[in-house]
Length: 296
Image (cartoon, rainbow, N blue to C red; front, side, top):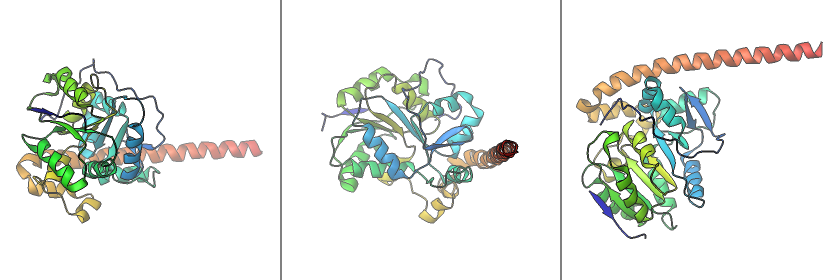
């Protein structure tokens, strides 16, 4: 169901080769490679400021993803999905494991950019601005309830439309129709809360037809902010144990996912770090030899 206002489940998804990468010609020096995916290396506040600055320029349909271990592991097993993430304007580290790997690779200032935190900070920061938001995701009633909560929790009444997607494969939506509704609403930012990897493909396909500044995928942020799904305690989030809490809360839905993702992420990361450290030492050794030969 689509609600428009005036201006003020899949795991392995075959990617459509016709999807074009959103326009992204800006060199990004604030990213570190984590298992082949460039992850943002600053704090949430930096990502918020960057998005807000982007809303003052041309509408370029930039895609932003809050990417956790699930998406990163999936990208290792699905080259098309990895290519899609690399085409995004920003991939924010949604979980602590990605942050730890980034720090071990030299990104000392890297912090977690949790999807729900990005959403809440953006809503607060843009409450008094002319930046408008379109909420796309959740089950029936979730997006509409989130609109109400945005006013109550963040003082932001700039929600210009909502849409609850039916349960379809990513390739089966009528993206032109959805985009017309979004474009007619005047939205500057589209928030997509479905699930990884479906939401990233959804965003990329939708970006082919929208006229907005950003399309941001934030996973379960909608459910967290309306209180329909419990969040892990902060101490568990900081220690990278949110997956364990979510498994406790939703064991039937998540046990297969985490049984696969957790060990694979550890194995992939160990190999990635070994290669990175070996290459770093090798290059440093070569540079030292060159300097030594130059002196002699």
